[in-house]
Image (cartoon, rainbow, N blue to C red; front, side, top):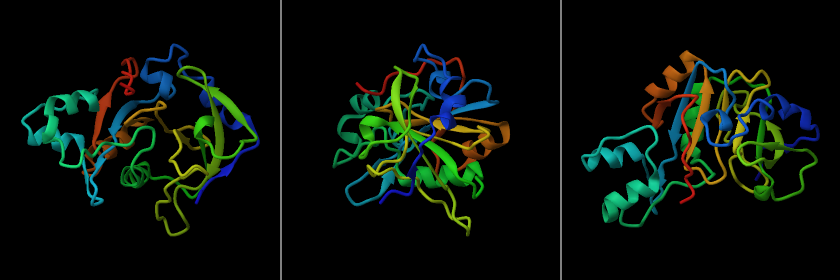
Length: 220
């Protein structure tokens, strides 16, 4: 069941959409420029029994050095059958609920409504408002909803298609979470204090990146 509602006013996303780098291959093509810090958060792999494992954990178990821009398919090719017995993989374009819940906690969001966007190809019903985002000028359906309830409990945002949106942000854009269409990771732009909390969180597999970094395609 969706926790979000479709938005009818495309102007809610204009400050974000128009600030993105139109070249489509930089960190600032995914989230806007101007943040103090940028992070990449890796979507964990889920086993058949419901347990999850981080990329960094798998890399460490096998004596490899993690890196901020490591790619799942490269890791899979290197480790082969050492990955997992049931070929568990991180979701593409749909971060795991455990990641989303942990990130909401470290973002310290308010009870205010937040805004969301997701590719219209992922939308189950027709959106009344759409806008083009980088990279590749993809048309996005717009939503709004809460990220915490009145008790302060994290609410995983879910669209009518049952997916976590590709983008989420507060009205003042003090932070922004974004990803590409088939990404196995999230890109976050935020302030220094928020970045410190995210990097220190044991249940978030996160890495510091630069605004000028090129974002490799995760659709191999």
